[in-house]
Image (cartoon, rainbow, N blue to C red; front, side):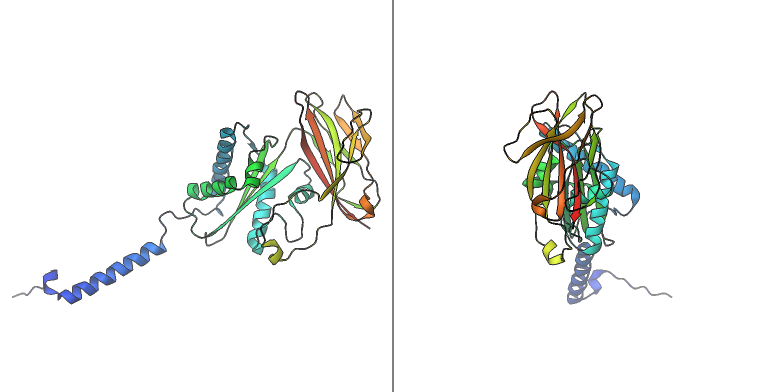
Length: 316
């Protein structure tokens, strides 16, 4: 003798069937809400990080080619600078071209021992990031929609880019930094600190078969000061030097600039492409951050370009 039990719906009251259906539908909705359709890739994994760099480099070059601009190469040193700034922004919960110490991209770059001209793009997103392609395409679209970031990305003077990412452990915060640099085989050196009124020496070398030295332009701004998060929270574009106040030209060049006083103080070795100048840093007798902008001119072109920037923090 045996007995059987059937679980066919017909044996459940209609009200109970409706209750079960509602519970199942609610549980399914919760599961779908908790699991995004495309989970963000973990950029804290080295392989994923390198893949993201490759993808973004491809996207940058696709944007440049569309505008008829030459591709950029990948610069490992610039990528270190980008990573360091992205990590700092994530760790200290801010988003700005200025660091907490008040220093800007060019000064941070100089402190790494690099003087080639540099410009920075940054991007931040919080929330669902999507898969790796969606995440990086969204970042690129946002940057290209910003006139300042777009101008930097498509600037034909830049030859290379370094790309850095910082992602929260939750995978729901992403910071991106792009450091565009002009690498033309030159080498430059300048002391990073000086006393007010002291003469400093900027020395450099460039390929004299391809370029000639146009001028070294001097700039000034106040010394950096620590920034509070409230100040950093305001969206700001940045520029190097609040004022440019003098131009130093090669001895015997006869160049004169109408924008600021000009003096022939740059010594040249035209054969080797070496140059040297020793300006006294005392703009209006004020301490501050002094900039030395090195402008070169390609021999087959009329327009000069910014090849290097050195910054010197000058105190009393």
